[in-house]
Image 1 (spheres, one colour):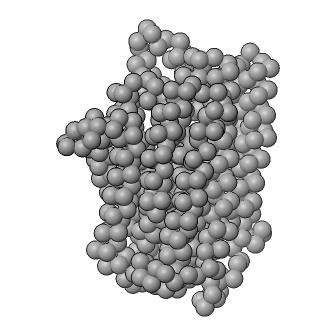
Image 2 (spheres, rainbow, N blue to C red):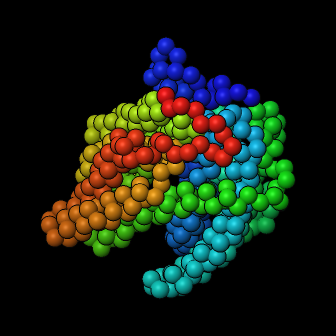
Length: 476
C-alpha cells in the first residue's frame, strides 16, 4: 500500500487539496463524537425512568468514570501521531505501525486496569463530600459494575485511532452509530427485565455499558479483519512481543495529553461548584448552556483529531510546507464552524435551549433567563474554544504535548479561574462572571497555542530526527 489517498501530493492547488483531505478525515470523526454524546444521552433517558435518586447517583458515578476514561483516551490516543509519522516517513510502514498499535493496546489494558482502581475511590470521595447515604449506596453499586467497561472502551479508543490514521475514519462513525442501538436495547433489557433478561435496575444500565463497549470492540476487530488496507498490518499478531521503546514513546507523548484533559475537565467541574454556591437556578442554567456549548465543541474536537493525523503525516515526511498547510487549514476550518455556532447562540438561542428544556414554559422562566445570558458569553468563547482545540491537535501531530499541557494548566487555572472567582463573587456579575472567567481561560489558551504553532520552526518542533531506520529526506 502506498500513501496515496492518505498523504496526497501538493498538486497544482495544495491548499485546496489539503482542505479536501482534512474534511474527508474530520467529518466522520466529528460525527462519531456527536454520536458518542447521543450514546450517553440514551443512558440518561432510560435511567431517568427509575427516579431522581438513581439518576443523581449515576450522574455522580459517571462524572468520575468519564473523567478517568477521557484521560486514558488521551494517553492511549498518542498512538495516532506516531502512526501518522510512520506513514508519512515510509509507507506502508507495516512493522512500525503494527508495533506502535500493539503497544498502545497493551497500554490500554494496563492503564484501564489502573483506571478501574481509581474509580473505586468513588465511595470515599462521596463520603468526604457529604453525599446522602442513599445516593452513595446506589452510586457505589452502579460503579462496581460499570468499571468493567473501562478496558474495552480504552481499547476501542486505540482501534479508532488506528483505523482513522489509516484513512478509514468512517468505520469509527458507523461503529459508534451501531453502538447506540446496542446500548438502547441493552438498557431496555437489563434495567427493566425485558427480552428475558434479569431486572437489574440501575446496575442494568451499567451492564448495558459493558455490553456496548464489548460489542463495539468486536465490531472494530471485525472491520479491521475484513478491510484489506487494515488487515495487512496484522495488529493482533504476535501480541505477546513487547516493544518497550514504543511503549515509553506513547507514554511520553500521551501523559501530557491526559493531564491536559484533566485540567480542562477540572476547570469546568470547578465552575459547576462555583455556580452551585451562587444559586440553584444559576447552576441549572449553567448546565444547560454548557451542554449546548459541549455539543458544538464536538466538531472542532473532531477537526483537531484530524489535524493531529494530517500534520503527523507531513511530520513523518519531513515536509514543512505540508505541516503548515495541514495545521492552518484545520485551524481555519474549526474557527469557521465555531463562528457559525457562535452566531446561532446569539441569533436563535431559544431554539437551541429547546434541545434540553422548554424555553417557553413559565416554570422554566428563571432558568431560561440565566441561560440566555450565559449563551451570549458562550458565543464569545466558542471561537477561542475551537481554535485552542484544533491548535492543540496540530501540535500533537508534531508530538509536541508537554508545553501545550503547561499552557492549558496555566490558562485554565490562573487567568481563567482567577477571573471567574473575582467576577463571580466580588462583583454583581455572579454567574456571568464565572462564564467570563471560562472564556478568559479558553482565550488565553487559544492565543498561546496558536503562537506556539506559528513559531513551530523557530522552536525546533519540525526538525526532529526521523524514526529509527527511516531515511532522512530533505525538508521541503
